[in-house]
Length: 254
Image (cartoon, rainbow, N blue to C red; front, top):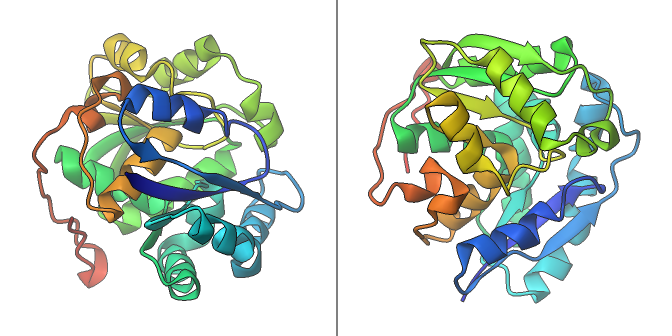
């Protein structure tokens, strides 16, 4: 059995993770602890507060007792909102406090792009434009070129969590660009686990969603690979394709 512990901010789309367990159809387990979020708002200051070390650490002991082999801060805005350096400091602090490998959704996006060998992306984000811009800046710090982006204008995770699949698909179509190798849909508040292959068929290219990437990154940390095409191209790549992303002397590798 492989167990990846998830620290998830508040309540929005956490039911995506039990669904993912079913789609994986293996002995992988994804216990989840909902952290306190403070103000539920898609603003830079609120996202930074959401990702404060004390908030993230709330569920560490519970997840350790659940047998977690790795921990994931299952938040996009609560990680990229810290900036590139801050996001890495955030998970380093989490790893030290837990005594376990740790990462976050935003860092997972960069690793997943390396797995797919992709460097040009489109971003379909439910956030206001300013918050989408923070994610674009985060990706640029990792050497990822964002060729197009669309913002859905949601004000909070509660609002994003109410989006139906057709609205997510519409935003993805709006964001897509012929030069984009992959379309990224950040925000773990969106329900996406049930229809990643539909998104990929619609756009004709790989799609990375926040909850899908969160699970993949946790399994990467736990050194567990699994074949699950119902979760999209990312879970249908048997052998890793390594691509160096070297922003300012930083190299990302598996």
